[in-house]
Length: 378
Ligand code: 6CS
Image 1 (tube, rainbow, N blue to C red):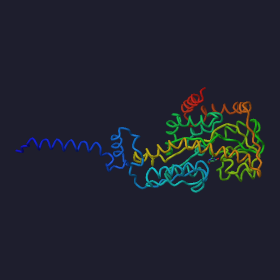
Image 2 (spheres, rainbow, N blue to C red; image 1 turned 120 degrees about the vertical axis):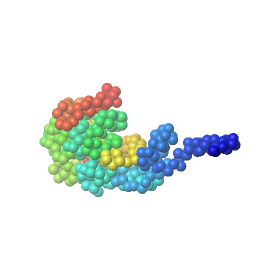
Image 3 (spheres, rainbow, N blue to C red; image 1 turned 180 degrees about the vertical axis):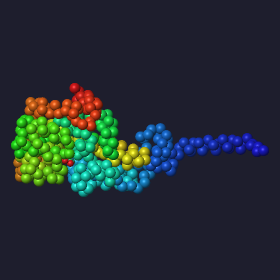
Image 4 (tube, rainbow, N blue to C red; image 1 turned 60 degrees about the vertical axis):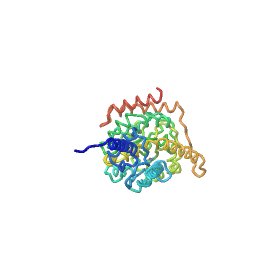
């Protein structure tokens, strides 16, 4: 029979207490990297707050993520991916490398969307206009005079909307695309050779659009015909007049030199250009909690960054077009009365979208419309 004397018992109690204290303080020495769910749970419990462990405290495994964009170096989407890459590199002490790709490196916008869906790349900046046939609900972004004209208010809707960030996201996820964030590249303007000031100015024009059947319906309503093209073919098409008009944010018009082959630019305030930060759904779902948190928090931080970036580029783009002495562009700014005429023609297309476009969920439309009204103070 083992007999403990009093001194031994006191020592045992002291050792046990000390080891309890050490265990409570020892979270940082834990070998779990946070790359698996258990590791993450432990660190969450240690801190009592799931968001408090900074990414640089986590020991990540070496990985490379490929990030395709639809734009070139210097343009907003590519700069977004490059900034995202820098932040991930810094937060993971270089363990995770994100490689941004310019438009064209891995195909057209449609090819890139397919590549993401197939898991050929992990991340993509994607414009909803190129998957309009596959995810009909994404065409909601092409309605004219639906979102607030002010990019700031539109960005607020994009940041806060449950209809978009939950319901529409689920629709994209049926196609292996997870949109983690929606952001504006700025207000779109129309360019043409005729000068668009009223809906009937569109009659007889051939308008370039993305791969979205609803875009055709909208420009049909104004009296134009439409043609789908990748933007890489657009300069030549405008120059040869196989298409007569196009829409884009001003920074993009200037940087793609569309103004060189078009006589007029109409500040129409008909819509904001929306892009989505997307990931392949199965890849993202298979990541550990630490990586998911790293991506989510970086994407969220970048919402304000990209808003400032597009603003800076759009302001500079407009100045450059105004000051271009070689290529003269007439700038037409629609008045409120002129905009009211366009709204009269465009608004029935909202109802058409809600009631007649096959495959869309009208509840997403209703919810989003309400959210827009709340943000706009209507
Ligand atoms: O017009 C387009 O198709 C292109 N416009 C922008 C602003 N970004 C990429 C997109 O493919």
